[in-house]
Image 1 (cartoon, rainbow, N blue to C red):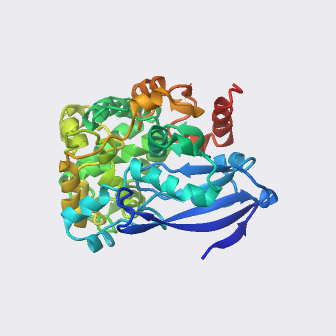
Image 2 (image 1 turned 90 degrees about the vertical axis):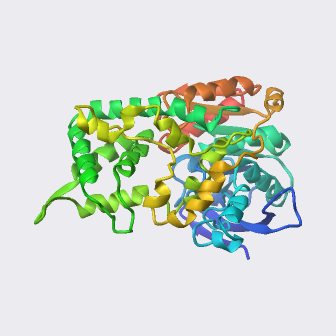
Image 3 (image 1 turned 180 degrees about the vertical axis):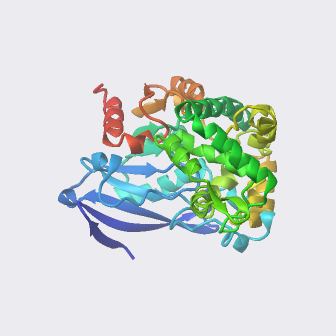
Length: 433
């Protein structure tokens, strides 16, 4: 059943589609996709072109906007927008600790999850496009992992695209996960250094919290075991436009005086559990490294293995000396499947995925070199989540792609910059800049 309703300035329509789990087996198991159509209220009856938004992640449903804030307001000036919950997220047949046992044990669950990468998401888009647009090509806006999907789209089904706009999401076409993380840890270290330069008082605060966690077992109200490594992973905030400030405010309220001595405050614990829990987006943890799997090598917990090459991230060693405790960033580690109650039942499933060697290629360099789709990409100068050098190398491969390289925004520039970012990128696809 299709439901249409209104919010301030917009008309919304819930849309649901049935697609194959495995697009190479169209007569096999199916899953449901959900997408929210958004159109400006004063344009609701007009025959507008379509823009489909692919969210970052992997593992996050599309934004739940109220009205037309940020980039959405700019898009609605000329498009109908489809906010797609990518398979396994939001209202699209969720994949989590509650639902995955329906598909069998850990090995079977891992097999199921191999169908939740960019290639399957793009084939979903192509399957539903005829129902949405009547067969006309649409414009895709890919943020972060959504940009990875957009590059796969250009590689496999460019005929479905009128244009592609990518923000912070040009992937390396060939790098193994190890290469991705060897490039990532130095970037993360730079972000941490910049944070401590801005808030030097946080050096001692972070050391105090880390020392407390080394000597005390802390279980957050939701059952999450807060270890030193988990605390360090709060550095994921540093890749966002307001992340350094958010981290600072979090650290400054860490301790309270209690009868037994200093204790981590309830307010601190409450915010930390919200930041660290994967209950709302378990696919991020399960298939994050699989987004880089393309050859016969397993990912094999790449971020964890590569971290050992950077001993400065060892908090215990930092505390034994005078150095600052370094935060980490966008990386998934096996210990997360022990500390997080939302992930514990999926530990064996994650191990099966980490050991796989049969990942298929996601990108076609030859086809990208012959690209004819107008493409523009925002590349952020020192993006913590996606390596700038990797992005620019890919940009040089995709024929006709125009880049906007900027240090005005962090990785979430399409949110922080809103209409201005989207307006500039659309202009680049039209040779107006």
